[in-house]
Image (cartoon, rainbow, N blue to C red; front, side, top):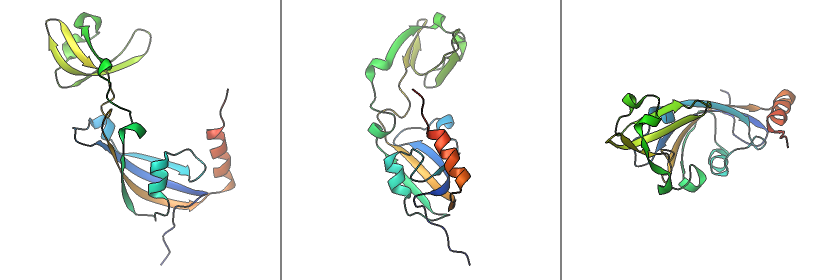
Length: 163
């Protein structure tokens, strides 16, 4: 029986993970399952996640609680604004208690949570849904293998900055 490999520096790690917001309904687009691979110790990774997975074995499941200051920051009441519905492309789609999004004429995507809708206006919360909340990251270690020269080259290409 083959020994399960352990996450250590210079190992290529493939993780599956899912995020949820502690104490709040998590939007489906935020909670969708994701998969990522990286060279441990070389590719950038949040320190809290790097510490949590260091030494983990293939097949292991880990739950990490990421505090707001390391995730999406504090809730900012200044990002709650009243806007006129006639400024929106699809005001008929605005529903209290739901997220609204559209692409502006300049190609910028905007999204906000509708706190209140009435009298031709909407109270829009532009904070990230996880602002001010812990983010729970449920991780499964799918694969761990020794990095090759090609993996290191790819890592260097991803991490070389410009400017």
